[in-house]
Picture (cartoon, helix red, strand yellow):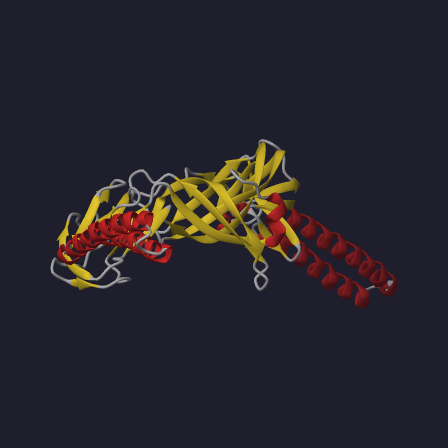
Length: 385
């Protein structure tokens, strides 16, 4: 407003006061006129103040700040199925896994596989020097021939009454022992050849022909990783919600772009008395063999399903004290909407009260927004490779 327009009532009041004072001194009834004049001036001043106050309030009401539009990301509220999940951490395990070890002492004769090679059940892995064990088989077989001949003679003599029954029994016992020695020698000889007990992948081989090995020495690993298993633990209170063949979701460190689905295979029979948790095992396909035993895994286990419910991204919900709220977009302006939330699953949150289907809720960029701020909804940012 022009300042001159606001000052003209004040100027008039000052002039009236000056005239009343002059009139008071020059007129016989000047005192009465002075009182009446002062009352008039007061009334005029109050009227002027009220008029100025009304003008200022009208100006404040008509003033609209020119805020720039704020870019936000928003999603339209829909009614759908809300799934509750519990998360856990686990470790990937082989379907089958062994450390190949010799059962006899000998030198490594030949290695038939390479590190990282895929093998089938029954494929030969390596051979040990069998010369000593071959000789032992021949020795045992020779003793067996003698034992058979001795027992045959003893049986004939016993029939003639030339020897006692005890001698015949001793001869038979020696025959049985010789047969067992042959079987043992052959078994030892067979152990010089090591075969794959199942289909899998050979681990790193740090072994060379000619190396002397003893029973129990670690040679290399063999793992069957398709399917691959995941071991994890959940709180005991979820035991009633778990069923064999339940589906779970798995994220694996090292492969963040991939999502894996697995099924529960086994639930342990015992509860951990210290952590009050129960061990769970699930399995899923690993056709390409990209996943390896020992990898860290994050498991999402569905525990409940709620139909016909409103759900929004959890990032959209803000709070002040105990009051939760969201920002919705109405005609290009952000409006604050108090809400009452329900269940959460780590990604979405159930809205029990405060939103309706079709509302547009801001879930990114709302930190820069205040009520009645103009906003513009932009497309979500997509990560570029």
